[in-house]
Amino acid sequence: MNRPEFYSFHQGDRVLPFAPTEYDARLAGLRHIMDAAGVEACVLTSMHNIAYYSGFLYCSFGRPYGLVVTQSESVTISAGIDAGQPWRRSHGDNITYTDWQRDNYWRAILSVTGVGRVIGIECDHMTLVQRGKLDTFLAPKAVIDVAPLTMTQRMHKSQAELDLIRQAAAVADVGGYAIRDSIKEGVREIDVAMAGRDAMELEIAKRFPDAEYRDTWAWFQSGINTDGAHNPVTSRILQRGDILSLNTFPMISGYYTALERTLFVGEVDAASLAIWEANVAAHRFGMSLLKPGVSCADVTAQINAFLSDRDLLQYRTFGYGHSFGVLSHYYGREAGLELREDIDTVLEPGMVISMEPMLTIPEGQPGAGGYREHDILFMTPDGNEDVTGYPFGPDGNVV
Image 1 (cartoon, helix red, strand yellow):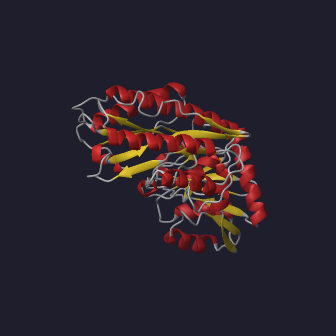
Image 2: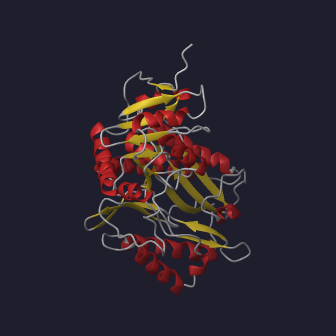
Image 3: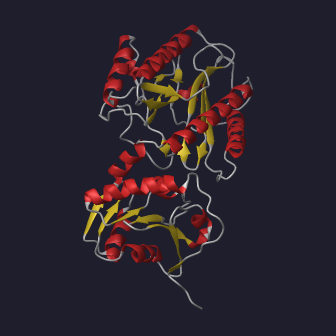
């Protein structure tokens, strides 16, 4: 029996999130980066970059995946367990590697790159083990980190990306309303969260009938569970007067969007209302600051001062916002576009960023709990456009 190291398994029709011209434009940008850095072949390994440049969002399950880009070729490298699915969901070529012997993944990559070339990699993703195998199989002349430059490219959204993110923000609103309609005393967090998730998945299937459906989720936190922004769902039962945190995350072809809102069950006490209204004021103020020509650090400093004047800055738990695009809670991050003191990136039209101030008041103090609002904003030539529709603040969110 012939046991190949790798082969082509191409069957079915191509189905991609964007038109081929969109991927051609992205690859042209990457090749410009490569040319400027002297890179002859990129070996991309992260879920976010492979999806960004090819459309293919892999499921690793312990197996390595890749996208090899040269000045003339773009080839996804996938495992035999996936059969023809990576080909159908990839722009460019695809090679399937087998597990008849170890490291056929690298033999497949070598068939595209050749030996002794200048290789671009993502240093923030490639493990030490895989870096050692790269050296063994490819014998590179040099290795250059292209991760920061690809991140910068991803921060500037195309019109096609903006269109998808706009629809996804509307899907997040659908999940938010489904969650609001499910809130009542005596129900569990998990039951409310499932209502939001199910509503979003149905809405995504309606809007994107050719997509692959995966990874959409909702977090719904109550009481003490609201103290952290990323606290998982539990079976805690809602009680009257509870502070709530609504979080919906539709995932469409690897693109992440989010809606996050503070709510209360039945009633809100005076101390909690004061904190909530202060955080809402910070949210409004922060959104007014987001415009081209302003740096992330400057926006952060102004919101810090706003909260400090109200003696609330000590309750801030993280930065005030971040970029959107191909990312999720377990892959991807455009860390160069976050509203933090140490990020000097200047906002430009075409960027997409959130405003999401959060205050966490410790248990035992008046108004205890975590307060967070979250809107998605497109940077426009003269300001910003808020694409989140679900309302924030006490009006309508005391359920």
